[in-house]
Length: 187
Image 1: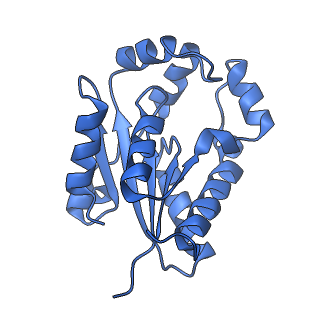
Image 2: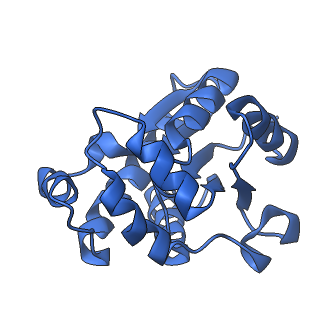
């Protein structure tokens, strides 16, 4: 039986637990994990470090890089699972659509893509970001992400024939979020 190569994109604004959940998924599927923040160009990191929100134009090349890198890793001959996991905010539907288009174009439409979108209240996000250290995204930047956030709904959802799962991560442990994803992801 031929496997379906799959990219799992774990998204949501800063402070939702993207990296934690993405790493758990990569461990579960025994596949590569790509930390999206590591691929931001220096200019993006400088903007965010200085409290300047990224524009759509700042994001397109970064999103394309992540799409191509994650799709290349999913189909790589040494990847027995045929899966790659990437963390990336994918705050807008247009970003999710763009990642899908770029990944599919890189591999002739042969990939399955799943978006896991984590979200919570603005107050919870600020508190979580305040409590972490060593990251360029500071709490004063959370509002800009929260303001443009488009939680997947309706036809975007896996339950409705789409490719996304939305999970409110408030008052939910990483273990519970992970199990909810495994129960629903259908790969």
